[in-house]
Image (cartoon, rainbow, N blue to C red):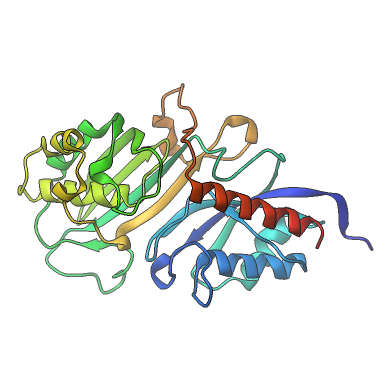
Length: 298
């Protein structure tokens, strides 16, 4: 029986993973990455080469509650086959949580309106024996109310130069931060943050600043001052990747993808971030699209 179609179908997947044993999302020769493991599993299900594009690349040690990817294939498989079959071939620290066919113009990265990240801090005198790589440990008492107050200065559109990695390749340092919520849950301090897009290490650098404020080492207005000076050297150390999770991605309603309840906090007029793409980003996108086109004829 012919299990191929003349026009390739675009499939979107939700991916959950523990990033502690991966060298990040992106494929790297000879290294264990989430992308490499996922593509190998999907290739076995499809019986042809599969390349995926993701909503946002995560660094080494960073986790995902819901990463979103898409790929194209000319083979006929139902959603259950991509979901169950893919998970059969994946290692235990990566799971496909849903699969759905999408329209040809859907793009996991460039169709996204907003993303949210969650950062978890274990705030007690001793480290965790059960989840040592799933949370950042801070033995010094944190004042979550001070952290929440300081975080509100970051809402809206700002130049986040003080909160971007030194080697960040984004053309513009401007981003629109929709919400940031800091709360204490017994021994944990949990930070949820959403923006139209994020700079490299932006979340971890914000968390590093908020922790200094939560330890009463800096005033609540320090976040406001850092926005003003636009100087990464004056901010705090970058927080560990251990406590960071890509929590979810929000897409326009017409794509028909489910959304995390946290996105109910988004304004009704939230729009996709259209940054001028750097030379590197343009090259990466061209290579990725070429991979997808090559898969159509395999």
